[in-house]
Image 1 (spheres, protein in one colour):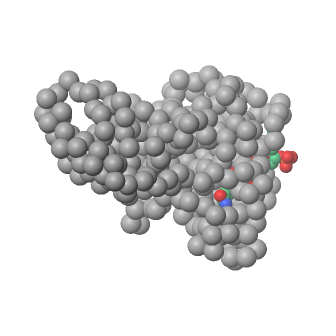
Image 2 (cartoon, rainbow, N blue to C red):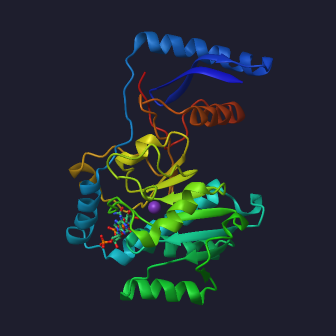
Length: 312
Ligand SMILES: NC(=O)C1=CN([C@@H]2O[C@H](COP(=O)(O)OP(=O)(O)OC[C@H]3O[C@@H](n4cnc5c(N)ncnc54)[C@H](OP(=O)(O)O)[C@@H]3O)[C@@H](O)[C@H]2O)[C@H](O)CC1
Ligand SMILES: [K+]
């Protein structure tokens, strides 16, 4: 099945041209296609792409959350790490995985690593078998507590990166939005492993090792990215990556202050699956395909909540 053009307009999913091998599919979209043309002829599309944050903005949002809104870092980290664990269960349900959820969680020295420790604990609670690689531990009460919690929950730790192909998934919680290239020596083995492995890699907040503002076309291209609060500019290069937004803790005044356009979280969800755009601001093909499958399956032509309108 080949979809050659898709337009999202006024909250409805409109197919303007669909080529398919199945007659039933052709018939079922024809009336929608006519509807799409009528609508398009009479109206102008509105554009609501997701907002991106620079490195400095992301750091300022963090500071504002704590200084202006009374959050503690441990609260933010708990919500961030939990949303990552939930997103992983949605994208990679445990029972679909060959080793029933063996996950290597690679944690760095900063808060991104802290998110990884929280995520590992929740994955354990969700029935996965996480194992943590944590080469540079931070001796602060927050991190010592997170390590203790993981140990108490029976999460194991490893210093061995050679057996990575035994895992179903690898979580990249090495560096987040404060990373400054180049990568220092201690982290080169884990960065090499993340780039080379064929095991799906899930990056928390940003793909580790890439320039947060400019990205890196040669850098890590994870299979899944969970952006926290809002995606960072570097994620614009990740057009084949499953993308989720997590960290549901932004108060409206901060959304307004940073002029953020973000998808709505459905109901009580802690994360939302949301497409990243390609360089030209279009949906990448696989996301189009998912939307199309959703519509054909459910016969609903409304965009699932969380998918915003995109321009022509
Ligand atoms: N508001 C939110 O969205 C929240 C996000 N959270 C998560 O926090 C990270 C950002 O955390 P931060 O501690 O500021 O930064 P990092 O985790 O990216 O890493 C900083 C540490 O990494 C070291 N570093 C930096 N560059 C390099 C390098 N090239 N090689 C080796 N090590 C490097 C840095 O060392 P310094 O010596 O330079 O200080 C730090 O040790 C965000 O991305 C989210 O994942 C919060 O959990 C909740 C709120
Ligand atoms: K990361």
